[in-house]
Length: 489
Image 1 (cartoon, rainbow, N blue to C red):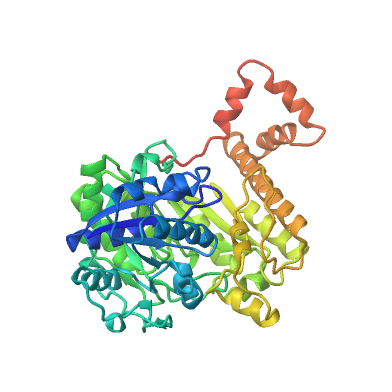
Image 2 (image 1 turned 90 degrees about the horizontal axis):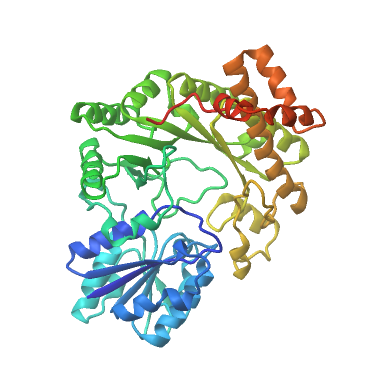
């Protein structure tokens, strides 16, 4: 069979890396002997869907598979209608949206099948049945389908894959890797890797319906084999581990770092981590094995708001983890969320001040959004029973840029939409200013650094700083002084 896999269209380029979910599905299908093509519509937000689908029409697939999120599902509905009209082929959909709202998703007349939960085994079974020209959908776990009389049937979820080493590596050769703008701090191309699945935590804002809450990991040797494949095929030595919990199993993490050192892999990498799952010794070992950046989900600087998220961390753990990371020579990036339930001007100020106090390389501020499948969504629906999924979710692009204000979507805080968006911009500005002040104090000492900082602050005294910057060589000196003390190389 010929199978086309399609990533959703976004209003903006949200992810700067390929969908590993599609990559794994494609690899399984190739393993089954099918010819596969991947079209990622998210790479080119400004290009119309009609234009994006031309390569799909030319490929003439027997089966088209979509992955979809709630924020982009309406672009998938549009594409599915066009494909059904043009090709009349079978269409299957999976991903977070299909898993969260299966009946609503499958009610679309252009969608024939739906996969909820992990997709590798259901798609394997579905294509085997389709290739034979038979039916038997009711026996495929994790599949949704329609009966002859149009009734929607959702089979029980397929068991989670117990041994992730059994999966083939993602089919990266089917992506246009050069088109994805993912680079490390030195400008070298970076590739994403997923070394584990599942998260046992139950944070109020997070959706984990696809990979489940059972933590499963690949063996260090299996992961290293994938890294070596990427080095040999694509010449890439920078990697981003996008596991939710890369550091949760310390023994496995130590084993991975030891294997990297034993093999002598010359790589640089970054990962996501919880602040309560790192120590100074393990961070130092991670540095030796090539880690140069760790991303921490911090969420809030107010103890009460943080507790309500069920994140199960405290501010002292945050301070300690960031300090340890700094001591190990690794950059820290913090993720914060403004507009959580109960957030008001004071609690948001607590978060901004706390973020500015931390020696972070970067801080990202998102606006809390109750997506279907999260506890935030469930709480919102209980309070407002009329709340339902609709096309407005295309507006739920919740990461603010440094310069543009983006309206919150389904605001669950005690702050107005406009003010919340303004606070997100203000938060980034203040964190950047605090970072510059620390850099000057580190290079020049607290006293002289403070004087230089005051001379360049964005207030009336800034005029003096601007005059100094006009002196030949001073601007270059300031840029050098503000440079990071952490090197990626």
